[in-house]
Length: 143
Image (tube, rainbow, N blue to C red):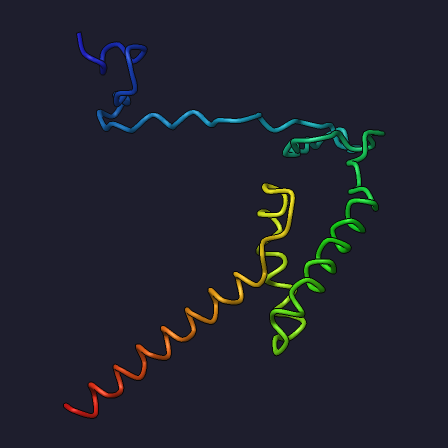
């Protein structure tokens, strides 16, 4: 016997009275909507149930502690001051971005990186980029 004759064996096509076939609608996943009675006795209202805490619950989400934010600001300010000696021409925003970039390193190693070595590395990268650009422009002039 086939699926058409035994629809419980799987998702097949079921024959209709007129001989045409239609597919079985897929089962909807998730929580079914709740049905609430409206003030009018003749109407019913469907309301999609929300996940999470129920309306009117006393369990409020906890706000981030004020001390954590203050300590984070102090750490960023400390890193900016450590960088000023090695990056005198950099803007405040660049120093702040660099400090935020090295923050995971500070948490991992329990200290800020050596900003003198970082300055040397960035200067070497900048010199290499300028040398490559100069070589490229020289090659274009010869062509």
